[in-house]
Amino acid sequence: MDPKFISAFVKSISNVFSTMLQLPVEVGEPRIKDGDEERFDVSGIIGMSGEVVGSVVLCFPGDAAERIVAIFTGEQMAVDSEDFPDAIGELVNMVAGGAKGMFEGREVSISCPSVIVGKDHNVSRLKDVPCVLIPCSTDCGEVVIEIAIQDRKKAEGADAQAVSASA
Amino acid sequence: MKILLVDDSKTMRNIQKSVLSQLGYTEIEEACDGVDALSKVGAFEPELLLVDWNMPNMDGLTFVKKYRQSDKSTPIIMVTTETERARVVEAIKAGVNNYVVKPFTPDLLSQRINETLEKVAA
Image 1 (cartoon, rainbow over the protein chains, first blue to last red):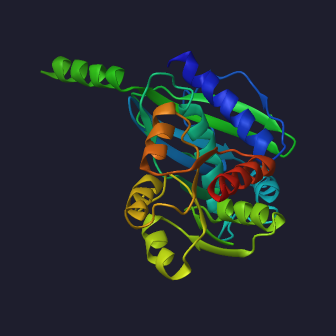
Image 2: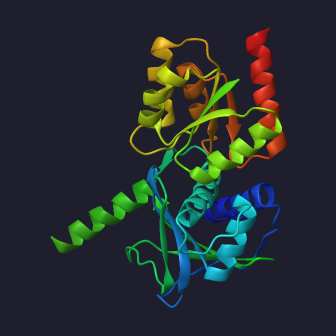
Image 3: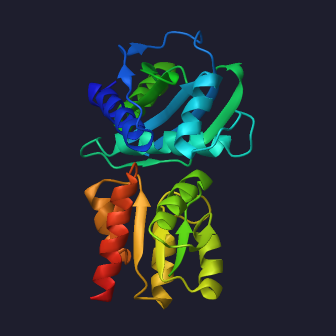
């Protein structure tokens, strides 16, 4: 994965959390996600298309998500309340949108967000796209960004190689 | 002043409403996408619109283009995560008067609203 993608997400989450929540983010060492070991209670998911393709997931333990949403909305909400997914969706929308703005020279679109709420779930993805996990620490608890994106040309090249290898 | 908020996120509409009420604007209508907004502009007759870009059913840019076919003058502020220069230019060509990038501070949104209304009044 292009390291510029990772730094864009690091900058973007720090910007979103400091601007909208006045909440500093301490970013840990990014690492390749090598299995389905990471499980969370709340996940906001955005798809990317255009010259960069893949998905971005903002993952939270339930209590951290509740604290963050309370600051963001000004209301105390449980994870199963009606408006909770909307707040998480808007957070991942801003994080992904801000990051893609830093993908210089690449025309990229983002999807409308989807949100999963459920204890100890795992978001699966296509195994041929490497997934980088960026752990983030805040006063409200842990947040993790999972980035599984790549340049479209690289993705198409991999597809062509796979077809050629199977022929 | 009548203000129409067009954003698929209720959270974002609430944040914008809070800023607007602090500025003294309380006559606010909400729409959750471009289709909803088009169905409301006729009866509500907004004097300012805040419009998100990425929305289901009809995105903000498409809405602005359609709205500008019948209303050339009511000011529109695009409030969006779209930061690329080409997108900003596209929005302005479609008829957007001002642009606010998410995330924003209440002060920035207030500033953009005030400068937009001042320009229109000049």
